[in-house]
Length: 164
Image (cartoon, rainbow, N blue to C red; front, top):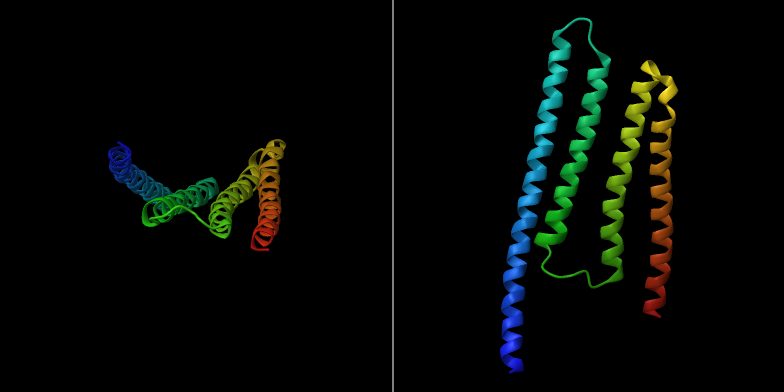
């Protein structure tokens, strides 16, 4: 009876793996297409801004913001493909998990920081009373990096303890 259950479990696991990989692929392709669409949209707005005179600088800042977000979306799609689809095995080593989490968190922290910078430039000229919000966004990015550094330190000491 256990052999039958083991075969069923193995077959079920294979079907689920293929299904989940297909979902990850669709999600990554969707995110990639959205990122490309955002880049094309922002470049079209920049082109139209150059066509008109005087040029609207807020369009350029919006374009930078959209391109930064697009790159982050594309990086997340790439991360999903690399970690969930192309990698056939689970993360077995603590070092692999640490590197994977670090890579993802750096992407998120960079996006948050760049958005904060773009908002500071945008609001600094138009609504300086709202500068607190992008400054808090930059502070959040700094806290994310500090937290990531703490995570790195703790996980490295755990890896050393496991080796000993």
